[in-house]
Image (cartoon, rainbow, N blue to C red):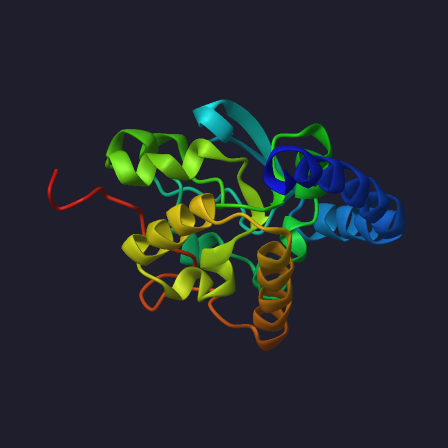
Length: 203
């Protein structure tokens, strides 16, 4: 009942309320971001959502677009600005995803939306993460965020798909808030963000 009907109703109502309440902050971050990034403060990218339907994710930009002499983007750690690091540490870069939630592309809680190119790298079990709407946060984010291995993330994602409850969603949101306040799991041990998912060894 909750997963099928109430979850979407709550997502719509709460995201609309949050956008209204946070509108002054969103405006300030837009202005500051435009100055800090020297232009467009927004980052948009196509991501796979529920049933692997593609939608356009929107976030505040945390990395510049500097390229090497061959015209290729520099590594993440070289493009991540000081302002961007602060946005990521506070998770304020994710606030614009409230509009994705309002539209129905995403939910407050669910597996995080990853890159389209990963779709062909998942095994059958990992594909199940797309049986529900992707989330602003999820079970993996509540249990380690980018400090987790890809395998552990996907295991948590599928576990969430099989066990969606209202109480469970509240617990995930509360744990995520604690992790954000403690600045836990912002980066992996070997990358400024998260390493590329290369696929499964059995493939």
